[in-house]
Structure formats: C-alpha cells, structure tokens
Amino acid sequence: MDRIEQKICEIIDSKKDEIIAFGRDVFCHAELGFKEKRTSGRFVEAMEKLGMKPETGYAITGVKSYLKPKGSAEGPTLAVIGEMDALPIPNHPDSWSETGASHCCGHNAQLTGVVGAAMALADPEVAAAMGGNLCFMAVPAEEYVDVEYRTGLMKEGKIRYGGGKCELIRVGAFDDIDIAMGHHTMPGVDFGIYNSSSNGFVNKTVTFKGRSAHAAAAPHEGLDALNAATAAMVNIALQQESFRDEDTVRVHGFISAGGTAVNVIADHVTMEYSVRGKTAEAFKDASMKVDRSLKAAAMATGCGVTIETLPGYMPGVHNPHEEVLSSVLDDLTDDKYNKRRDMGAGDHMTGSDDFGDVATLMPLIHFYTGGYTGSLHNPDIRVTDEYLAYVVTAKIFALTAYRLMKDGAAKAKENIADYKPNMTKEEYLAFMESMLTTEVVEPTPLPIVGK
Image 1 (cartoon, helix red, strand yellow):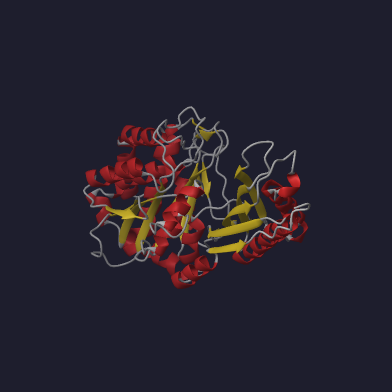
Image 2 (spheres, rainbow, N blue to C red; image 1 turned 90 degrees about the horizontal axis):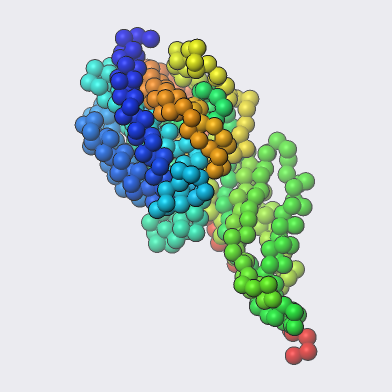
C-alpha cells in the first residue's frame, strides 16, 4: 500500500469503535423500504459531521452526499452505495419493536461500510489525492417486500417503481453518476468479489374474485376463489417443463389473503408472485406463461381475476474489470481474514437485487464481506464479527474508491471506457414501463341451477 492507503486504514481503525456503534445502532433499529426515516437521518448526521451537505428526499428516504461540492470537480463521479432497508422478520431477537423489521439481510453493514469509508476519504489529504468526485449514497427499498404499502405509494404518485434503485434511476439520482460501488453480506466467508450474473424479475399481485355462498348447504351457488387460486398454482407448476434450464427461471408466490370462514365459499383470494429469469427475455416469457395460467384458472372456475404486474429488478451484469477490487482484497488478506471466495463471469445467482438495474446502465464494482452466521433472510442470522462486518467493509469501500480515483481517476476512466451498458436510461425506463400493467378478467358465472 502507498502512504495514502496506509493513512486510510489508520483513520478507519482509529474510528473503529464509532463505526461499530453505528452498525449496531442501525441493526437494532431496522426499518422497511421507503420507511427508513430514522436510518436516513442517522446517515445524514454522519455526513454532516464530516463537513458534507447531504441532499435528501430522493425516492422518499434516499440521500446523496458529495465529497467535493457538487459540480466542482472535473472527471467521473463514483457512487459509494449503502442500502438502508430491512426485512419483515419480527421473530428475530434484535428486531425493532416499533417496525417488526430486522436486518436479516446485512444492509446495516453496507450502510456502515459507506459511513466508515467516508470518514477516511473525507480527510483533506486523501480527498485531494483523488480525481473526479465521490457521492456517498444511502438508498431505500432493496428488499421487494411490503408490496401492498408500495402499491399504495404508487397510487398516491409518490413512487412509480417498487425498488429503491429503480426509482432513483427514474427520478434522475443516477444521472450524474458514472460508475458505482456496492456491497452484500455473505455469511461463511471473509470477503470476495461479487461479479456474477443474477436473475431479474417481475412481481405480481393477483386477486381472484368469486361469489360467496354456504359451503355445505348451497356450494353450487358460489364461485370459489380459493379453487381458482388452487387451479392457478397447479397450472403454474405445470409450466415448469416449458422453461429452459439455461434461463434459471424461478416462479414462487404465496396466498396473502383469502376467505372468511370454513363454511363460506371464498369470494376473494389475493396472491403475490415473483417471476425470475437470467435475462429480461426469459422472465418476460415466464411472466406471460404465469398470466396465461392465472386466466385459465379464472375461466375454469368462473371467477374473475385481476393481475397487477410490477417491474422488479434487472439481471445482474458481469463487469470485465476486477483488478482494482482484487488488489484491495489481496492486500487485506492476513492470518485472520483469508477465507476469500470470488464470484465471476462463470457464476450465476438465481436471486435478484436492484444493483442489477445500476449495472444495466454503468459499471458496477461489487463485493461482499462476512462477519455473520446463519442464513440470510432467516431469523437465525447473527453478527458474530463486528470488525469484519463493519470495519473491514469500510476499508474495502475506501481503498477501492481511492485506487479507482487516484491519478486523476485513471482506473475509473478505464473501467467506464471499456464498459458496454445493456441499455440507455431511456431504454431502461421504456422496458420498466412495459412491465407495469394491470389486466382484468371479469367473472363469468353460469346460471344457478334450480333458480
């Protein structure tokens, strides 16, 4: 490491207690997407303490904070991104009683890493050694949950898309960003490069509308929405053989509401589905097959169905430049932290995250760190090594940002020049709008026998 890099590590280590305290605080005050008011406020306080002037209100709770005055620096702008939201897992022992949410996703480590990195990168000597500009971003709503609430925000005109980064792209928060950095938590390893492809998806809210009747005395007078939902699930399962193996399609959902009593024919059932695939073409094809299955179930039972499709996230995109991040991980490997596992061009994740939307438009440098045990998105997740989860994450963010932006941002410029975006912003928005649909099939009841 050069002298500036050594200084970066020294600053972060000198602030380790403060960094860990921030991580603990966010962990114990988890909030769901587009509701992260306390978390956003804590990030704003941290940026202001470093002398920056954060901009708030992006996609409701999102924050942008520039290292140098906005527009004052020539050259590319690098976004250092941390997510704020948590999951609705109230049975985690550290869930916040006010929200019922818990950070079983590790997003508190992301945000803490960004804050810790900013503490070092805001040092005057360090900042002066970098070209271009840095933008520290706190972003909302990566986890695609609490869909009913988000749909309400859409109907109120407060958002248009259900994912935080998707909405930030739409409102122009990424218009002045040229290259981005992101992070994820990965239990069981110390750190690694996260540069694989991943699935994209669309989300569906499905409502079957039937007609209630006495389930024992006169079931023939009803239209059973629960039967329609059951038929739909069978129809969707029978589509599996039509999905190509290489498209890694995943269709999964649940019944979120339906029926009122065991002896009453259900007049309504609500379901939620995610339809995922390795490419936009793949999940769009699967989405149409799911819609066909839902409408067939409605036709078979005489029920009506409303299918509300919301754009989810784009597939993850491999970045051909790994050398800067790899060099940082090499330099941080020691006797204690040496369990490294990289995911690259030959790997694929069947899960989804909205960093794929960012990578659709610009180069993304993406890594993960450990420090947790248990399984992500489960109540058994625990932070077991706070230094690794928070402090090492901050070092990787800071050192990688510095190496990208030093020497007049030479490595960042090289990365940007070699990257071939999958879409322009205009093409991206057009695709998202094409996935934002509502289809209604009215009930088709037959005459009631005997009446």
